[in-house]
Structure formats: C-alpha cells, structure tokens
Image 1 (tube, each protein chain N blue to C red):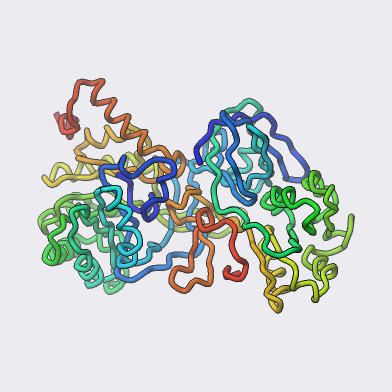
Image 2 (image 1 turned 45 degrees about the horizontal axis):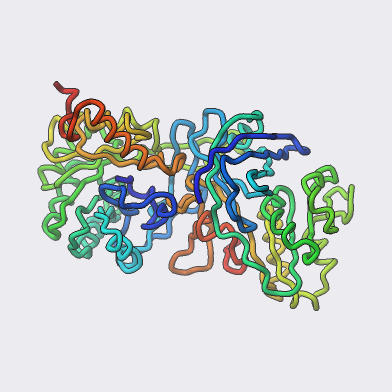
Length: 283
Length: 252
C-alpha cells in the first residue's frame, strides 16, 4: 500500500502506473471539516529522508467521497480511509460519517494529532487516551479499524496493547518522527515537522518487532521502505503488510518496483506466501 | 509523461551563479508547453528529493535547464560532470495558456528567465519582452532572446534603463495600452508584487509562473502550495494546479 498523504487524493499517479497495482489505496488524512494546511515551506530535503509539515490539508471527508470515490469504484481498488480529529468527538463523528462500502476495507486512525482539549498532547502518546478513543470508534462503526501510532512514546508496545485491547483490528506502525531544521545562513527555523524516509527504517522496524511480541492483531509496517529488501525486513520483523511513502517522491515507481521485488524474493527463495516469512527472525 | 534516463552532455557556468546544463534523453523529447517543468534527480549523494527546474529549452532528444545555485540541490548540480547519467521526470505542470489578447508582454527578472524562455521563443516578435537584472553581465542568460529586442533594465544602470524592470514597464507602456496587453511573468516575489500593484487598477490579465520548494512534483504530497483566493481550498499545488497561475487569484 501507499502511506497516507503520499499518493494525492486519488488519480494523481495514474499517468505513471495504475492504483490497481496496490493491495489497497490509503487516502490522504481526512477530517470532518476541511483543513487548509500550513503555510510554506511544507517540505524539506533532509539527506537520508525528508521533513514534512503539510498540516493535514484536506477537503473534508464529505467532499472527498463526492469528488474522488467514483474513481476507486471505477478501478475497483480497495480503499483505506485515513482520518483524524483534534478532539475525541471529531474522531468519533468522522468515523460515524463514513458509510460502509465493500471497497472501504478499513479506517486508519491517525493518532499523531494533538488533542486540543487536553492541552495539545498527541492522542497517540497516552495508552489510556488511545484505549478510550479506539473503543468509542469501535462502537460507532463496523468497518475494521487500524490504529496508526506515533513513535514518539516511551513504550510503543504499551500503546499498541491498549489499542488492541480496545478492539483495534490492526496497527499501522509508524507515523513520522517530530523533527526540526536549522537554517544557518538566515539563523532561523524554516520548518518543523515529521521526519520520514530511510532514516526512519530502523526505528520503524523496532516498533513493529516490539509490538508484534505483545499483540496478535495484524501489523502494517511503514517507515523508510525504499525497495523490496526493506519490505521483506518488515515482514520478517512481524508485519503482515507494508506501506511505502516518501520513497515515491524520489522515485515515482518505488511502489510497483517494491511489489515486483517482493514477489521475486518469495519465488527465488521458495516461498509461496508472505505469511511464511512473517516474524521469521524470532525463530 | 515519464521518467527518462538522461546523460549530461554539458554543464557550464554562464555568469555569476547561473549555470546551464544540457542533457541527452534516452528517447525522444516529450511534447511540452512553455512553462512546464521537470523533476531532475541531481547526481551525487546527500540528496533525498529531486529538484524542479523549468524546461529552459529543448531539442529532438535533448533538454536544457538554466539554474542558479541557491542551495544544496543546485550546488550539487553545478558539480555534476559530463557523461554522468541521471533521471528526468516530465513534462509536469500546466504551462502557460496561449495569449488571448493581441499584445502579449513578457516581464521577467533574474532566474525568472528560466520560466519564460520557451514562451518568449515561441512568441518571438509578437511579444514585448522586459528583462531586469542587477548588472549587464547577467544578460548572458538572455542570449537567445536578444534577437527579439527585449527592453532591458539593470539595477546599476550598466545597460539600458537604470532601475527595476517593473519601473521600466511602467515607463514604456502607456496606461491607455493596458487594455490591449496580456502579461506573462516569472521572477522574484518582489518583482511580481510590484507588478501586481502596477496593474491593479486596470486588472490587466496576467499569468504568473510560481516556484515553490517541491518534494514530488506530481501532486502527491501537497508540499509545494501557493496561496490563492479560493475560499474553500486556498492552497493549490504549484506542481499540479500550477505552476502557472492567474495573478489575480494568487494571494501575493
């Protein structure tokens, strides 16, 4: 799959390769009401990765369905709706507003957002907050729920366990890591945002591996996957599926290349299914 | 649109911090509209993202990029050597819409020339071209267009009008003529702001080519946005809804 926010709203990549290639298309983060996003600069090259502070720009979940869902219907592409809110109520109402459809295979909760009713601390940092919010969302929707967690916590396994106990059907590990850039020449901060790309891979792998020890729900691994070898590493660490994000910006064909490479790896090593290598590093 | 393998056949210093790189494509050049751009994978390590560059010029199987060294990416590009292989993704963006009025005017300054060079060449003598720079040496970047008799403004007065290009434009174009002209522009924010003020009474049609930091160049990430007057969705992607915008819809 693609990581949320790295493949536009729907058909932007179609001129180069089709979304039918994907196991599922993960949407841009959507909210109940539209968000305009941050002023520029919103992106920054950070050598072994990049920093983004897009600011969750999105047209709102209603307009997204009105304008873009027909594209996925036409392509018969499974869709995972990534969504967020700045209060518990917003999360719940947003989840409620998404009508079930055979193509909407899951809702992915972006839990890295600040809880503005709790002083701005990120939802995903508190296992109790995560438990409460996942439980509430499970009460209002029958669509499978993935909890996407932030790596900026003391014990990610604890947060993962809370999400699982609350009924999450899966986990997406991990979101970006908060980071900063310094402009020496102008002596200022041009951008503060989320770090993504290769630099995140070892952190993401550890998060996947740690959480795989304590939960039995599927884990989707994401963080710095640039090629098939990277993807295979995540499967071996315990992931059932993977997402590719920033890699697409440097190489627009990163996703189809990775998918082809994973198939080739399995074939060349005598595996028929990915499940045969899942968690294999734990013997 | 596709991602073409390209080989550097020339990468020369033009003047000041301006360089011109010419690449041979592994395949025929795309059909391009003036104002479109490419995402170039800059050879050499230490860069994660590609860099966007206007298509300055092109041939049957070649593409030329005029650039100024302003940061890590352009610095690395200035060191790229002949015969180095790389990738060019394009053509990207909307490009300029064809002139609707009878008197097209191109106003540009500094490295902005890279954005309007193709347009100026295609309009030829149909257009009145205004170019501004700091010193006459920088006119080397205008070599091809000098045939079309551009009006020149230099800040230090070393050639043509002493002052900025918008002041020159204001002097040369009578207010009565503003009703017939259509402007195409690309250049520093200060120049564009000044131009907007100059034509705000007449609301002369004007297309502006905007440049922003980009990550993907394909409309995937929403990193390169331009603030517009659209109330519902003010931030538009420079790489997808742009890079050419209606000046009157840009919040500058």
